[in-house]
Length: 291
Image 1 (cartoon, rainbow, N blue to C red):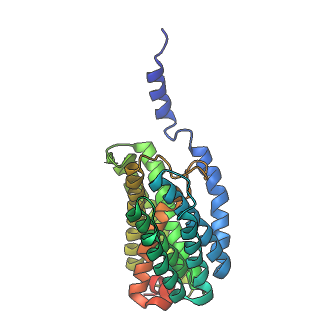
Image 2 (cartoon, one colour; image 1 turned 90 degrees about the vertical axis):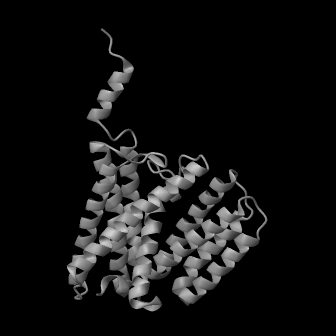
């Protein structure tokens, strides 16, 4: 008796729950992680240039998503302004980035093009995220550890959510927004991200000879991990609003740049606000790690 294809597919899914996208995701990670680590370690202008390229490219995807077309106006000028926000930070400080950011928001609001309110929202989001990343990295070695802390929490949250969610499945987290996400995946992501963040937190305290309380590292790791998952859900909601599956196809297994940095941008802004509130504008990395 010939087995029905539908039943065969279900059995195969139980044996291999990760689908065909696992290998492309792994290959992309093998390329992106070293490049990100090198940029983070280099700091200053090299790091700013990487952030400029990534955030300008992500905004380009946002513009295409909200308008449904590849138009140069006003996307290209705004991309240039977002790139300038990044480059200005190490060269002239946060005040220069802030001035350019304000001008970019005004420009987006004044530009005559469809979906103006979505455009302004995109400029605010990507502009603030750009400032947050540069402020977290700063110019000192402390910034390297603060950036490593952020990356470890976000990446391990993503990895934990992917593998735990695919293996255990269960109740959907938000079926109307992202049908593939489950509560088991969210819990796995939170556990993986928190433990990874604590590991970097303790290692940073040892390396910088300024150990901070374990409980503070635990709370910040939990908050950053939750923020990264909320950022992922928020982007999924926006994509569903515009009937888009992926923001692009530049990264195999992940989609576009927005698909890759959605968690990172949300978590980065939360971590930036923590450092800003604790130590002020000129000492964001210290405000993250020194308690």
